[in-house]
Every structure is written in structure tokens, then in C-alpha cells.
Image (cartoon, rainbow, N blue to C red; front, side):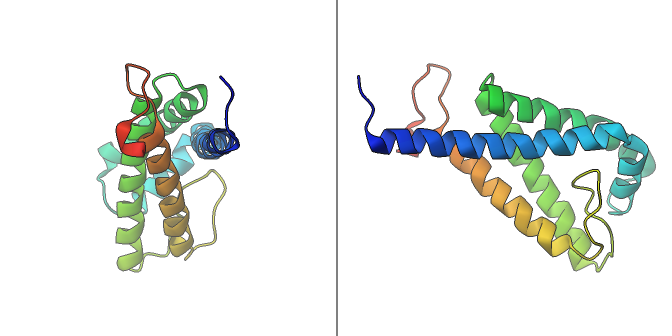
Length: 153
């Protein structure tokens, strides 16, 4: 069966979104793994968690980002990876908006290298774009029977 140009375009856009979203999460997770102490400091700066939980987040979050990024790009357990990604992005948005609203002048901790301090608004915008991408991919992902999600139509 031959694909229409619309189907090819949708497929290409899906792969583009998938590669960008997975790439961001793989890059972010890998950078945090390289320096977990620095990442723990960035998590602590949000003033949302006490020290035992800061360490737990600093050790687990990079692996979750890498697992979800790998699942998205490989399409193995794609729906679970996308649901995990959406959940992480919602938590990230909550933390960023909370810090921004409290006037904290901190590095967002999104990647291993720093964004300019005071750039929390930029990080919120970036996370909103990533969230939209993840939701689009989730809505168009296949269910466990291999059929396209009906809500995507």
C-alpha cells in the first residue's frame, strides 16, 4: 500500500519531534550523570526538598531522563516513556514556576552547563514547548495492540 504525501509528512514530523524530544532528555540526563554533586546543588537551590530527598532526586532523575529518552527514540515501551516524560515535564514546570514566583535567582539545572541566572522564564518556555511535543507524540502513539490511539484522529 502506497503512502500519501500527507501520511509521509505526518510520519516525518513524528520522527522529527521524537528525535528532538529524546535528544533533549538524553543530553540533559547524561550531563547530570557526569556531575551528580553539581546537580544536587542545583536541586537544593530550588528550596523544595530536604537534603535526603535532594540526593535521591540527583541520583535517580538523570537515569529516568535517559530511560525515557531511549524509550522515545527506540519506540520500545514508547507510551510509558512518553507518559514518564510528560510527568517529569509537569514536575519541572512546577519547580521552575515556584522558583520564579519566589524570586529565586538560580540556575534551572536543566542541563550540565548553566543557563544565565534569572533565565527561569526561558526554562519555563522551553519546558512548555517540550511538553506540547510530548503530548502530541503521546496522542499519536500506538496502544499495546499496535493500533493508533483513537484520540489522535
